[in-house]
Image: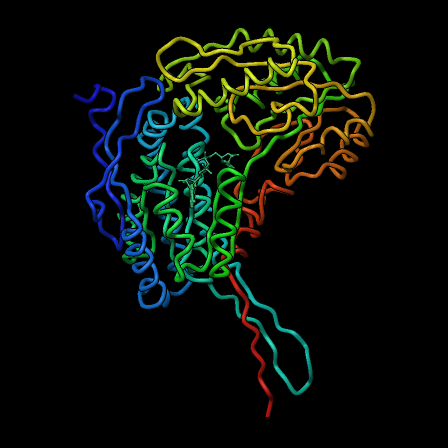
Length: 486
Ligand code: NAD
């Protein structure tokens, strides 16, 4: 018997060629509510054969459907309509996301779902901004470039922002005129499956969008290796990103990789301590720390280091967990048992490596995958908890002496996804922004995103960009045309 909370959630199917179908081998898996540990519903699990069918549908749609011949204004209207549909179903999608991923409803209803809608609205507007160039090579020639869609694209997404990541992968691909196969993460497939139904209602030709939940090592890998897929856009761990780049190389696909992070959140001594402590708390505990840009390395100028750590510890200790569907809840469960155990493993390693545990450091309760907000201080910058992505509510604090010491510590990471700096001194802020090796730098703020702002990583945090014109360009290729003038 499903619980009353889950009763209305029906089993989810694969969406291939405009139809909702079971997996060809009948396989299905359960998705679990991380707050209650109860199964929510079953979801069809795509096999490699199903991935092939989805790619074949996307290829036919790209080459032969109206999608390829419609004027761009019509394509823009449809992409805009998807954004409208998402907005019209905000609360339904937000509840589904909260149940499947443990994200507080106050976040899913005000951030995840509206932002996903905005991504479609933004790219609908960019459809007609795509232009080629004329290039003055010779008086006897007319030279110009055509910007053309790359073809069938695969989107592979993680579990921490399921509907938003689906939007990041689908919307720019459609705006470029590509067709798409999306494989959502195993742990959180439900909003992507519901999105398939909403997209279907918008009337896109069959095969333009296909959504196939399934295992990364089976359906995901097949998409990456498939010779008819022209581009893979992946968001997930650095480990899997490396594997995807290797597999995609065999057919020389274009790849966009949005990978892990270990972002430095830097506080200079001239900051207002209460404000920065509150923001440091948000930077690490938002979405229970399951954020690629989480401010997981807190670098504080020596003079106020003790005060910041003490106050952050006090705030962390006061945070309480709750039912993700309760509008008052700010802290939900980790996405899965495996994720909770991995986080607690990092906490043990932090203790063993001599870091000072200031707050948290254990599971909260014994039902649901809740972990107490954790603060470690005086962490050795070489320690595992300072170097590796934990992807949970654990922050490691370290002090710095001066600007050179700060930059050495901030850039002492294989990752380079995001960073932030807090100071009243614009010279320090901008000097940091120039010196830090990261794809984003927030100054006196944290964690802001916009569909128009390119987002992506330096170093092992990735290749390419999501959002903005930069993402759209990743789904286009230029053709140079030479016309000899008679
Ligand atoms: P993951 O790498 O385990 O899985 C991501 C996706 O890849 C899933 O859909 C999975 O099924 C699929 N996959 C796994 N193996 C595959 C293979 N061999 N071939 C093809 N697909 C495969 O990541 P996760 O645990 O779902 O998400 C957490 C990670 O995502 C963290 O490292 C986080 O930093 C990162 N992330 C990055 C960003 C960003 O924009 N940079 C945003 C969100 C999350």
